[in-house]
Image (tube, rainbow, N blue to C red; front, side, top):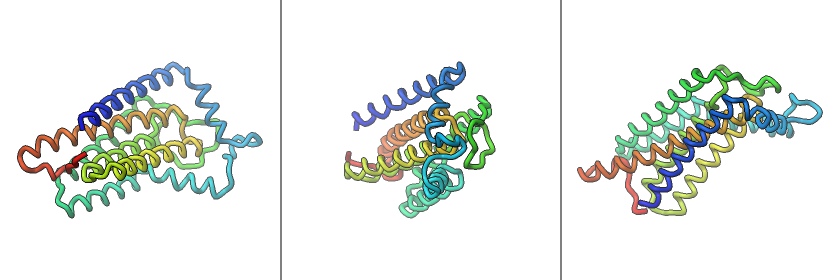
Length: 230
């Protein structure tokens, strides 16, 4: 467990450092050429407003991006809370609620702080209402799916199952973020920032859950946050 704590702590620091580096690149304009190149890569050479791939692929991208929407995130969070409620893991429910709602607030505040405009070089394939940086879908999906996985694996002793669950969370996060660029509603640097900050938030959530479970276990309530032997 000490090795896991050390690895997650290092991951949080690295993710935050990458987020800061991304912010500096965006603010100085040094990432504009890269952003544009990646955005155009997802578009047809004949028509920049036409994303590559058949119609069903474009539809699939829209469905995948919905996995990072607030409504879907709220639904999954409520389902997870319901399962935890059945097993009377009250602290875990409170923890998930605070972690996810706190991350959503951070996302909204950062958008208002940076006020970066959405890409205007391609036609948007999804409706948007807020600023571009950081990507809310990338941040919220990373924060939510990784946080839910971080809590869930505390109830699982099988190492392979824990890795599989975490891998699924990472895959969902990657797909949602990539779909935002494919749909033309975010610059790649927006998504990268969301991934970094969301990952850091989830990692910090895991560390907090770990230390809280150690503290409450001394009072006989360790199972409320979940315990594992690995």
